Length: 448
Image 1 (tube, rainbow, N blue to C red):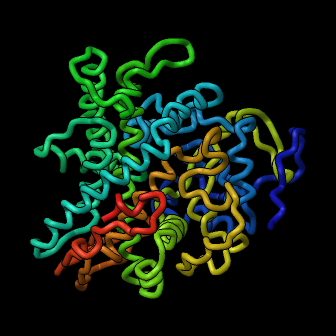
Image 2: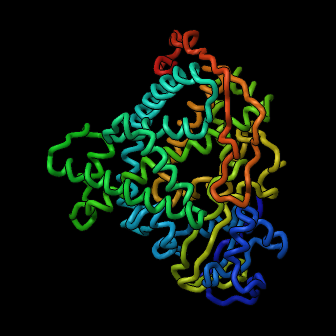
């Protein structure tokens, strides 16, 4: 284990932070994408450098030790760290990602209550129902583009689970809108404005449902997200305003729809790494979980995350001044060769016996999942990925025709260019509907 270099209390430092000589690195970031931070860390032979982003001087950090200090709530805050263009697309204004301290803990506790083991079981059951329905359609289709199809599955799943009524006529449009929020993260021009328009439409729709619940003209089930968020009370005793309530409900549905990117990359890995595919096909459900973890580590999704320095401190003899924007490298940390053996190889078995750390594997944030800034929905992500992986390996057969399966590391977020096309889909579900007699918890009875 490397020396994590804990932050010191004294604001005195003697080592200057290496500085990118460019006047502004925004265009370089757009040109280089996920490789922007790793390349400069190699260039400067360090885990830290400074570079201007949209005119503002920022500090960029990478690695397990950097993640540990970054997720220290005493030294960093999220308030003021999320750029306006991302609030207007991906996160929305006033969401839990932009809160700190007691406000963050209170709001996150409400969201975590919606992700209890019981509710995650409900989510998984619903997801399998929509996978079955999709598979029935796919067996009749000439070709299937997996990514938009899985977005549709997950949007229907998320809305049904959250208690959000979704008409068949609008299901695909809403799935595309939720997907547009994610796609706008690193986009400029059309991608960005498509995300903003989607945000406005979704907030109007969800906000209207929140208002109906409060007016008692719509009555979702008691434990559903729509009801819980509509009735949520902030620490001061006031309910969330309608727009913020809509933002938080979207913040539950949107990450579920975003899992379509991970599942599409999982399909790519199943195709390109047949040995790993056979381990999943022949192994236990836990092998699908290991496969899901490696997909999240190996393939690019979120490139980095930002926060602002709460108070002056020193880390590794470098001074961090209050208010400074700091960006943590997610992509590079998940592939750091000091922490990961053969990081550029796809090896799900690496998760069998690894020493757990909340800071070296950060595809969805780091630190404590209950009180820190690790994503509240990480367990849901893994469960949904597991179900998708099991369908792709055990519950269906398909062929992968010639197509462009490459993905562009300068595009954030990225995806296989073809969306992963499959054809000649055949279902194996009939052979797999019987529960396993010796399953003491009855978990397999919920599985097709």
